Amino acid sequence: MSLALFAYTARKNSLLLVIFYAVLAFYLAVMISMYNPEDMARITDMLDLFPEDLMQAMGFSQQVSDLTSYLASWLYGLLMLAFPMVYCIILSQRLVARKVDSGSMAYLLATPNSRTRIIVTLGSYALLSVGLLFALLFGTGVALAEWLQPGQLAADRFLQLNITTMLINMLVIMIGFFFSCLCNDASLASGLAAGLPITFLLLNMLGGVSEDYQWLKRWSVYGWFDPLERVRGEMPWTINLIYAAGAAVLFAAAVLIFKRRQLPV
Amino acid sequence: MIEAQGLTVTYPGGKGVFGLDFQIGDGKTMGYLGPNGAGKTTTIRALLGFMRPDSGRAAIDGLDCFADAPRIQRRLGYIPGEISFPEKMCGCEFLRFMHAMRGGRGKRSAREEELLALFELDPSGRIDKFSKGMKQKLGIVAALMHDPQVLILDEPTSGLDPLMQNRFIALIHRERARGKTILMSSHGFEEVEKTCDQVLIIREGRIIHEDRAETLRRSRTRTYLLQAAQPARAAAVLAEAGFTVPAAENGSFEIPVAGDAVDRFIKAVATLQVVDLNVKSQSLEELFMRFYRQDGEEDAL
Image (cartoon, rainbow over all chains, first blue to last red; front, top):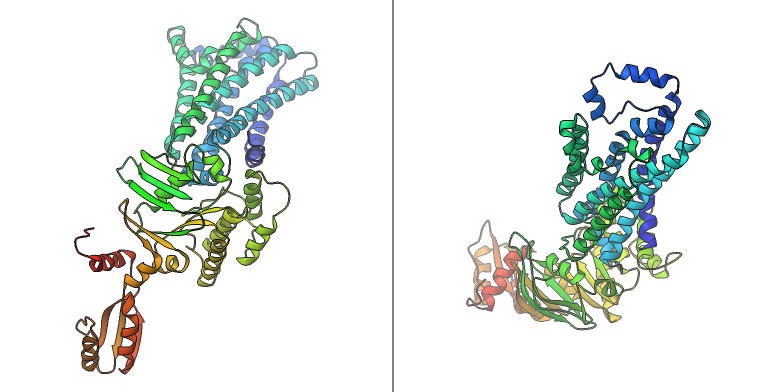
């Protein structure tokens, strides 16, 4: 780790983080304020008007009654995956591929810092910023719930939900980071870094449409986990290990590849 | 000491450098000449540790340029050929950042202040708003501010105005006097002539000539454009003095003059009534052709 590079990276990318946090916090606030236990039955009735397949594809489950499950279903089923995914794609490309493509990576490499050190620093920033994003969202969610729906949110289960969602996004950012370290060409890197997670998201949505297509979810990193089962404690915590291990393997591969690569900068 | 032994670096397209062998001893200055695309920057990428050789070896002070890059960078100053700074950064911030990345702390060093004053550069303000010359100056300051022992400079004067080019050359002279080892690429003979002990010429990825700068200067040919009041007499006088005189065009001659014949040429011209005398600017490619024709036809390009 290079502290100088970490501090510089954090400074240059803080605005991006703030924007995504603000958008997601806004959604949290709206969703929490809209929650009304008495209305849940009516919402369920209303949802029956929509095609069931569509609702399932969007990850919205109808059997929710408490605030935690409601957030898991309505927010963490799609929005908390799709928005942070965009953040992961943008940040992962900024960190390495764009620097190699523009040539400014030469300046980092022309200092007495090894390639390993540079990539470990940049990758750590990627992971820590995702961690920070979800820590802030968890804190914001708890505070908003305390204010708007006192006593409704099960903070421990909401924490579990955020931890797993954070780990998924860490895996997604490491997919982007891996391609960012692999390709010389920034447009190829961003194509792969964006294409794969978007495909995963689409597979996850299609897999939710009906029982027949559920197998699609197995091919998507997003589909390995069901937010509603997670908050109900029906999903073993070991799922966290799988995501964390995936992210760690990709991080290590990114470092190894970058260390040996030809860099025409 | 900068050295290459059988250094081969290739790109997927088949371009690259092939079997380079050279040595730059401690305290020596080597000019690295070649037309665009000849492989100068590729060689430098190998020396900086950005590219791993396919075969052969690049080393600085005995350390392998790829494997020991971080240790080498401690004592190395590098000016990239195409400077690309980090986006949206202020010049001051960039210099501070480079200082910190080299493990430095606190304020600007005296050396940095000195360099900023020398090039009259005010580094405040966004780099992307800088002119080409300012960016080049910033690159120079960033490369030299930690007072490195080895300098690798890829076309360092490009974008500088003549005044600043001269200041830079004077700076290189001072660094040379302080015992620095320098590799400086360029596509201009003059610049290299003024600064370097040795000259290395590369073409299509291979070294085609290595010589002392002084020898090169004497053996090379310059073309003078002479316009005489009496063309017929001028042709006769010059032919008698032993120069090849092509047919006059509009009363002006293009006369190739070898480096060691300049004195003879000037003295011959002094007897004429001269309307105008000029040196024709030459591309490096032309220079090579002349240089090699003189060196012997068997030295095929």
